[in-house]
Each structure stands twice: as C-alpha cells, then as structure tokens.
Image (spheres, rainbow, N blue to C red):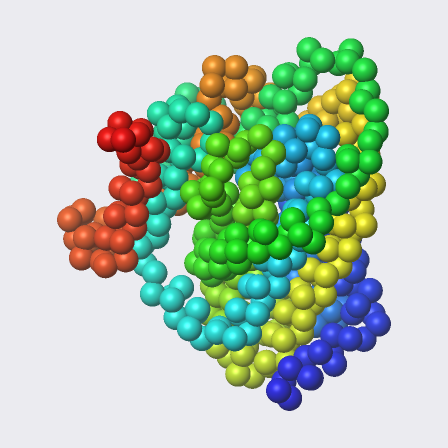
Length: 491
C-alpha cells in the first residue's frame, strides 16, 4: 500500500499531469492519422525526454500509447481509413454505422468500450501480475505456432458471406508476408530483383491502400451526390441502456484482449481481430455484422485497448516487450537507468504504480475526448466528398511515405488500393488478407523456431497440451461456418 501511495504521489505533480494530458492529445492525433503510429511518436519523443524526470517521461509515453490505440478508431469509423493497425477491425462495422447516419453513436461506443477495456486490463495487472507473467513465460514457439494457426482459422467466419473467399484472401496475405529475406536461412524470396522487396512488404502501406484507397475508388462514382442534411440522429451518443446491453461482450472482449496482450509479440492488432471474431461467434445476430452493428464496434475496441494494458505486464514484470510500442518504453526505462523485470517490481515498485496510474488517467482523459469530441469528429461525415476524399488521398500518400521514408511504399499503397477495389467488387473482403499479412510472419517464425528445437520433427509438437488445445479449437473454428447448413438439412 505504501508503494501505491508513493507512486501516486510521484504522479500527481502538476507537471506530470500536464505531460500525461499532452501524451493523450498527441496519441489521439497520431493514432487518427493513417500511416502514423504510437511507436513512431514515442521514438521521436524519446530524445526529448532524457532531461525530464524518469516518472514524467515514462508516464507521458504510457499515456500516448493508450490514447494512440483509441485514436486510430476515429478515422476508421468516419472515413474507413484506420489510423492505426488495431483499428482495422473497428472499421468493419464502425464505418457502415457512420454511413448509416450515426457517426456520433459509433464514436461513443468505441470510446466507452476502449476505456472499459483499458481499465479492465489495469485492474488485472495490479491484482494478478505474478500469475499472468507465469502464463506468458510458459508459452514457447510451439504454443505460439498453435495460437497463430488458431487465429488464422478465424478467417473462415471473419467477414463477408463466403468462407472459401475469406480463406483464399487470408492465404494471399500469408503469401505476401513471405516476401523478402528469410531470417533463419538468409534466402531471398519473391523479390524479383527489386532491392526494396528484400526487406519485405510493409504492413502499413498495404493497410492504407486496402481500406482508404479502395474506399476512395468506390466513392469516386458518387462525388456529385448532394451533401446529406445534418440530423440530430447523426450526432447522437449511445445511451446508458444500450451500453448496459453490451456489458457481457465488453467484459469478454476485455478478458480476451488482456490475455493476448500479455503474450509477447501478439499485440493489439491480433487482439482486435480476435475480439471482432469472438463477438460475431457469440452474437445472437451474426448476420448483422458488417452492416453497422454495435457488437462489431465494441468487441474489437474493448479487446485492443485491453491488450495495450496487458502488453505492459511482460514488459515490466519480465523485461519482455509485449508489443512494438512497449519495446520502446522498455528502451526508455533502460535509458533512464532502470532494470525492467522482477528487479523493477522489487526495487522500485512506486515507478510501476506511477506508470499504471498514468495509463488510468489517460483512459479517462480520452473517454472525455471521445464523448465530448464525438459530435465534433462526426462533422467530418458532412464534408462534401469532392473536398474530403482528395484530402484522404493526400494523407494516405503522406502516411505511406512517412512509415519508412521510402517512396516505394507509396507505390505499394496505390497498388493495394486497386487490388482492394477489385476484391470488394468480386465479393472478397480485405479483412482476411490483412489478418493473413499480420499473422504470416509470426506463423513462419514460430514454426521455424519450433522445428529447430524439435530436430525437424513436426510430430513432437503434439506433445504440448496447449498446442493440442489450439489445434482442436482450429478444427472447431474452421467447421463452424458449415454447422448452420448441416443442422438446417437435418431439420
């Protein structure tokens, strides 16, 4: 208790509070701009925080991390351009709801679900850090490979009406992820003599192209349409009764996101995808997903923000980064002279509580931004398309180039946009392709590591009980889309 009070005392100085709110503002802004990301912002801020007090600098970075995860949902909902990778799943139902004339309600649902997911993960951290860290530490390459295969199996029921098309798109995403040098053998694959492809195809330009650019091409035929008349419904926030109906989904997605966040290398993007899929799996009305359904927004938003908090568990308790952003926070801790891991908790517990206190304040701060700013943000949907979409095009170009300062990524984004446009015209959803692209490197890396450990004997994988559980879940997941047809025939 003394450490908690001491940590809060360090945090509640007015300079630290201002830095936390500054981190929230930067995080929301960076998260909302396609192509920019929390890791990029933290990497740019790190040199300027050397002269700051360690508690203040780490608290600001933690606040930016939390807010950046939520900020990506703003543009995902309003213009179908996810500002951050975890917001991809939010766009599946958030954008249709905005197009149906309820952008304020969609933003409100996202804000509330994000805050509850973030607070849930922080409570779990404080209550059960040793147990959760032990679970994460018990996962090896075989278990991660099983988890990745299970996540890929969810493609069958992720979105769209055709499970076969979803699996085909997912396999294409995995194939794209293999472009470049294989880290284990050093073999160059599918680069066709193009030097830029030796490093692989980056995720962010593909993401911007598949969602923002393809939507721009789709909307180009309606540029002359009259601007819709603003209505009270458009700016309406979700009611307490509507949120109460979603409480079980929020808790379930928060728990799933926290667990995924604790596992190193998984991160908020995978948690959001799994949160969306599980929300659809447990829903009484799965056919409404993709049309602007409440559950399709709440599920991924609660999961991805819970994962953001969960990712801090192995970072602080074990010194193992739970995501790319927490790897930078880990570097910042080392830069300020701390030793992340068990020593951090035993020697300086007040710093740990100060960090999570900052994340707690950040969650409430962007709740205010999300609810109070929902009406303001929703005005974006009433900007004439002839002005809005050229702006989206320019930001897409900037975001693609800014990711790695390479013009080649701009070409990747443009090609991805054309591919995404034709995919949607022929009944293929871009979401499974994105999922395959995200999970492809993890599947390949963990499979290679597991084969090295087990002397190239795949059958030894089945000696792991956790792997067997994930394989059983994979079979159930792949067969689930066909159950309704089987039961219908029997009836």
